[in-house]
Length: 357
Image: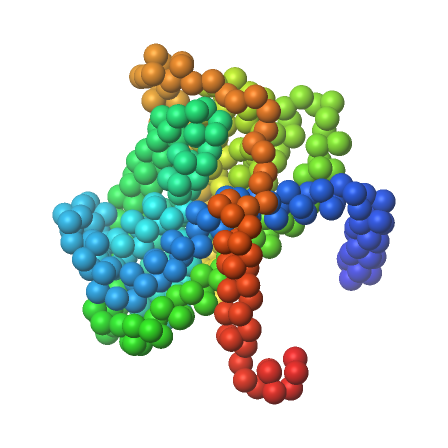
């Protein structure tokens, strides 16, 4: 076995190098599409919310936001105010928000890894900005189907949270208080921007890597009908949803519910990177992802049955979504990239700069 494994790794590496040479045009096209996707969808919908979520969790705003939902959080979900705020932000911000905040709480010693694992079961959700503003409007011409999918994921997360809370109430450690920030307001803001930039780098890197292989996948599966759509959706949710226009209206709604609730392998790797070093088992989280996905798709299907007349007027657009280089303007996008580069440079330790590494 010790001799076979190095030979196998060598063979796989050699095949990848040969593919990079022979399929360079397809790889270039996929990488370009991945960059377009990040600039057009991911960064505009996630970057500012990541900064805002860090500011909220490091200030008294976390208690203020949870206060109107105190009966739901404490009596039904069995969550402290701060932990319910993480759940609330995960429902508003998208997949990486909840995982990032849970990981931060574990690393700060505010919660145990076991509590973080239970939280993660219902704190990784698709954002309403993607489902309604990006996907639903472009694909079906209305926010109705996107709202139905988002509502199904809210109900699924609540059901998982209720079941989890009955087995293991999630609480902040008694010795830790989150009522006051540990840093000054300016330091918290700088730290929030820096962390958001780093997290966006992780997310966009995985998206670009997966999108690089999609043109090759389309070529290999071109004779298998819509198989490439389903495979791409299970690998990377955004790229998969871009091709749902080839399906019928009802099928595209159910497929979008499946892709966005499951998250895809790309999201799994992002979550793995964000919770690294926290002691959370990614395998146990993946097992909980299966009932969450079944619940979301089932509730979406039930919504289609209950409101067939309302959904029948929606038709899929013709062709895949068009990728654009700039969401608002070239100047705004270039300024964001330059700012991110400056922040990354400023975050390098002085010892590293001194040695020129």
